[in-house]
Length: 245
Image (cartoon, rainbow, N blue to C red):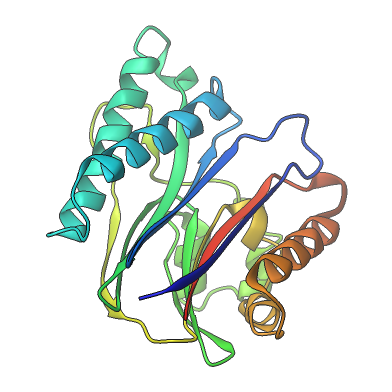
């Protein structure tokens, strides 16, 4: 398999960028990841950087292609969580560093993923969003139950609250491990922080990805659009993507 990859991270209207991202392509195996440090807790940037470092070091330490991608993803995020808990062990629980995260691995024409919190993974095909992960949040539940629309979710007062994350309590967080999905040439796998997707509809993302420009150009344009639409409250907006060639 061959890939086109790209990544973008914008600070938005914040004083610090607490998002971290990673893209590694090793022959026919590729990994993309985004981690979003939770700013309401101690040192969100350090939490996101730690998660990135742990996942990348584990990915680089195993032979490729991976024998069990789902097990690798689950164990890698579990290790990131444990190290984050240890990093904040001397702090009160409410002040310990935390982060959300999304990691996608592609090999052998198949994609696997794992996410926690409201960092997302999108699978795009033929000009549309084929599927996306479901956030660990109350607002996501309202959307899935049809009680509010995706547009209403963008302004819901609880839109920034997540029910699962890396760090904080020692108990392993709820992680959504994605079933393996076949990918084909033209498909794009995309991971992003909530500062990227929270002011975009699926149609906005798909239109940009399939606008006929290089992937890096498309990601830069849609990221800048997301930040502009958010206005003075714009969060860090981070995205990484793989296009199957």
